[in-house]
Structure formats: C-alpha cells, structure tokens
Length: 333
Image 1: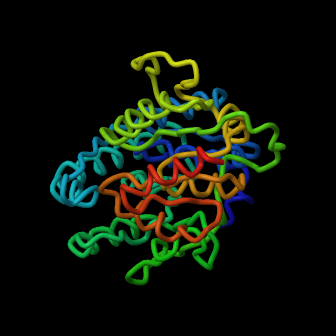
Image 2 (image 1 turned 45 degrees about the vertical axis):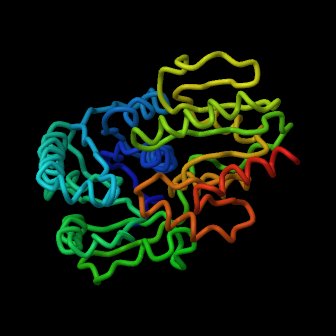
C-alpha cells in the first residue's frame, strides 16, 4: 500500500506517547492523508495535546496512558521486561479501545505508530515504526513476543529508505516477518522550504522524552545557559515553563507548534536535543547543526548517536564528559 495514494478512506492514526517524536513524525502523513480521506487522531497525554494544537480541525480521541518506568540498570528494555504484565495489559487496553473506535467511527484503515495494541481484524492495520529489533542485551528474552506483536498487523511502514540510511540495523528484523515491510522514506514535519534567516539564537535546547530525564536535561541547561552571555532558548515540550529564575538571556517555550519550532531552529546556531529518531529526521531535513544527547537507558538512542557520529551536521555525546567540551568549543565560535 502506497501511503501517498490512499483516497476515500476513514483512517485512524494513533501515535505512541513516549516523548513527542511519534506524534510529530506522524504529522507529515496526517497532512497528506487528510486531503483525500477522513482522518481521526488517537493518543494520550502530551502527544494528544500536541496533535490537537497542530490539527485543530481533526477529532482527537484519548487512548489509555502507558506509563513507562525505566530500570536504573537495564534502561527501557529492562523496564518493559520487569513490568511485563503491565506492558501486556496496556497493549490489551489499546486493543479494546481500537476495536470500539473502529466500530464507532467506521474505520477502514488504522495507522499505529508504535502502539502495538492499536490494530483490528475488521480493517487494514499498519504499524509505523523504524524499530524491527531492539539493540539491547535483554532483547533476546522478548524477541519472540516482539515478533508476534509485529505480525499482528497487515503491514509495516518504515520511515527510512531501503538502504537503512537513518535507522541502520534497527530496521532489520532478526527473523523474517510474515507481513510486508515497506520503506516509505523520511517523515519530517518540516519541509525544508523556509529561508535560514538571521542566526540570532546561540543555543536552542529542545527537551523531550520520559521523566525524570527530560527534567534533568532542562535542569542542566537552565543552570549553564544563565552562565553564558549568549541568547539561549529552551523548548520544554510541555507546561509549565516558569519554575526557574528569570534570566535576561534565556527564553522559555512550552508546547510549540511546527511553524513556531521551525522558526526557532532556523534562527539557531546550534540545536541541542535527544538523539531520537524523529529528531534526527527533522534535523537532516533542515540541514541544521545539532548536539545529540542519548536519553540514559535508551539503547536505541545510544545506537543512533553512534550511527550518526560521522555526520558533519552532528556532534554526538557518547560519553558524559563530551558535552562540556562541545559547548565550550561552540562558545568560542
């Protein structure tokens, strides 16, 4: 199925709410599909809030919240493994809600961005993901169940090219799947059409991801930005934004739409963000210099930082001591 040729369908698009990346990368598909189809949005928490801001003309439906707790030693994969009953229960809740929504809204097609329970046997169900394997030592313990979850869908769309340029081995399944896998190209909400303009922002921090790591990232840069005599901006990705002392050189933003964020990025000499897949797609689309900082415990983000370390667009924080050195070098520019 070509996602850009779909017409006259009632489509449910459901991104995962672990950070904003799944919602933001779905934006390009939503914009295209809503021109010739009836589109409904489904998610929870911050992702759903962002979708409602970005697409006020579309109906947004709330799905159950999947609360993620990281293992201090084994990270995200360990958190899933050690809370497996909760994780399976969340998938089951998503499945029940999806079944109801398919019937209530007469859905013809589901596009689920990493929500493994949002599928239905009564309509075509597509999984949008770049991750067909997990680069973690514990993955072997959940590889079988993971394959079962993938095969529940009718097909998989990978937002990358067939050469796996952005995703590397993440988009290479360890075992052959029983469903088609289509590489549909980059999905960036930015179209790269705006002119660069004046670079009047030195550092732009885009904070995202799970707690407490989002807050820790903000704490670090709130302190350090106030020490430099440069124009710095912080995008919190959520409210509130007034819990820190005011500073003449630090401007704070809450939940911003695509146009506002594009403007901030174009004005920035250097963007600082997590090495999430959606962030990398957006930065490459905009040809923007950036520092990529993996979220602690996320083996996928560490892998992506290492994969793109040779890209001259990026400076990647592989070791904790890398970050102060990078910032000091940019301050000297």
